[in-house]
Length: 161
Length: 379
Image 1: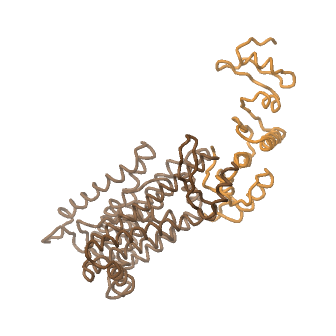
Image 2: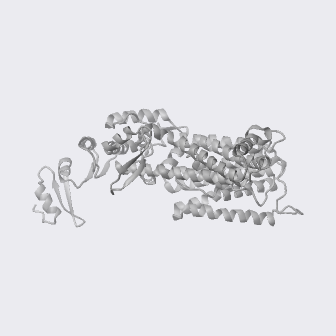
Image 3: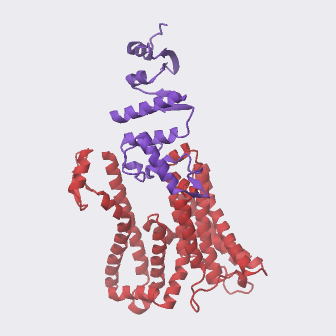
């Protein structure tokens, strides 16, 4: 897990940027700037907690994942590798994370989405790559791919077209 | 999990409840509610100290004295009389410096039990500046000697930090073993090259007057080292609580993997923290030489480095706690002799009480960890 569980939500949100403005000025952390930033982000990503000073260890898995997402997306990355980002989360949190990743796609970020849930892969993807024995056996268009086709490919069947 | 919340609500007083675990056995675990958890950090050291004193009282009874008289003697002189308090402050100085060093290492998850060796090296560094640099004014000489003490201690702390960060060698072992090297190194130096000419026993010549710390309570032993130690505590508080470096140290201490992913250099942080820890303990050695003894003896420290580990654990990472606990341990040390004289209780009882305090704090930490793993397992 990429979180420091003993840190507050606000402290976790600045993990990638704590040394730079506006969080750090004159060699000192700026609690007010950090607090304001955290409140804005919690609103934007719908992180549900009574305050930004709550420790992340007290959050639900979904809210913890939203903290990770908020932190990593803050730098507007061009490439996002999402490895099972919704594993073990409840339905609401899954929907929130999916829609947020789609926003990033629309912004222009390339997303490699890795999941064991076929429905999830089909709902999220533009293209679906299937790996069998360590190699890509096919790259399908998500619009036309069917579960049966993907299932066959995953089990080593030969790609028809 | 709903069951956990129900258990917590039924149990607002933190009573111990039997709770069936997954294996079917009955585990006695303490359910703590939120209000109770907030009290935990302050509560357990006080309980540990109180329990140690209660058992200490039994030992005093066994020794055939009155515990109340003994405890009164223990604290009355060391805390309420002018000379006694001066003596307490003198003992508090190295304890405070060294415990700050243990504490800062602990923040980064490093267990520094090399305070003793770092004190010896710090004492050596400031002695060298005190002896071989002569004829410069005190305003330069004192900071220079302190800096040397800090740097010598920092090197002694950096070595285990390097071995841990780069070679993966457990710092508990290396800091402990480096103590022996430091003690014997100083012992060799004061018996041979640094030995005062014609001295009956091994000690160095007096350091220059300009390198000596002023006395702050006239006629007593209390020297300016305590002011420096308190300043160090203040600076360290700002560093840990308000600076990006403190944030970085805490992140590495709590979750090195997450810190690594956030492009924080875990290795550099560990080496830096261990050097800082060694430097603080080095200042303890420097202040012993520059403020108290004015020369290097074979025995620089009487176990301050080990008491510091107990102090840092007792204060549970809080700097204010470290200041108070060092004062408490210093009062125990300085009051022990008075207790022996006036109440006829052997000094060793004090060591027993200190040991029991450590034992009880270890128990409370273990209980707490148990609670934490239990609650985590339930989530």
